Image (cartoon, rainbow, N blue to C red; front, side, top):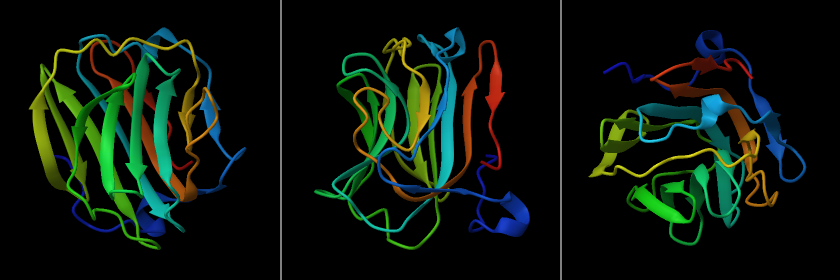
Length: 173
């Protein structure tokens, strides 16, 4: 596995972006590269929450019925990967802590979907769901439509990989 086992360090990972709720986001224009379909993909980032608001969305390309999103919910302390309104996989409660870096990774290989936090796999499930694009921009820090579920904290090294065609890498953001 190529998942990091060490905590985030600026000397290794570079800088980060501070997000303080809406309208603090980073957006990359819609692209067919975000249409993962039924293929393999990886979504990952380092996240350092400075508060635990109700729901925080780290990476998304979502418009309420289609697209993907990685979200953390304060009501139950669970990290989830969604395809549209459908939860694909979730961690157990209590994975996130305030003022601490967390490495978050969602991977689909074939029909196997896994969710990792800090190198620990918190679940694997089978899903042949079609992760079609939503027409929205790829967004770091909240849902693009509507602009809610805002992050409060730092995000760095967000990476989106569509393994069947294009590798898109936005490091040291």
